[in-house]
Image (cartoon, rainbow, N blue to C red; front, side, top):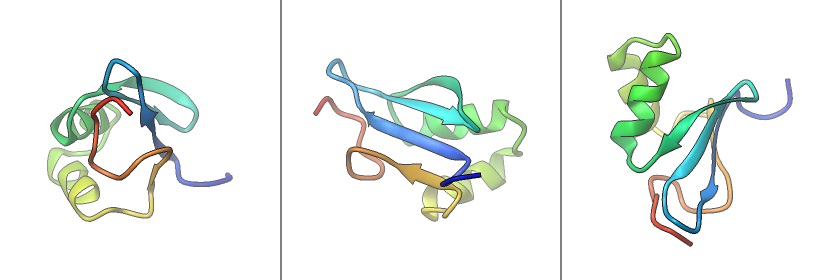
Length: 73
């Protein structure tokens, strides 16, 4: 697999960032809390998801913008 399995794409013009897991869109995050919830719904327990997001895990690739920023570009 190329790159990280979880990708947080560039902020959209209206705000929020598309999130994909292994190439499948799982939602549009407007905050780290949204991202944690999407990861939880994808099968991670909440503590693991929170740790991944807060710890800047190598499993998450932030594209086209700074990590943890969801505002419109």
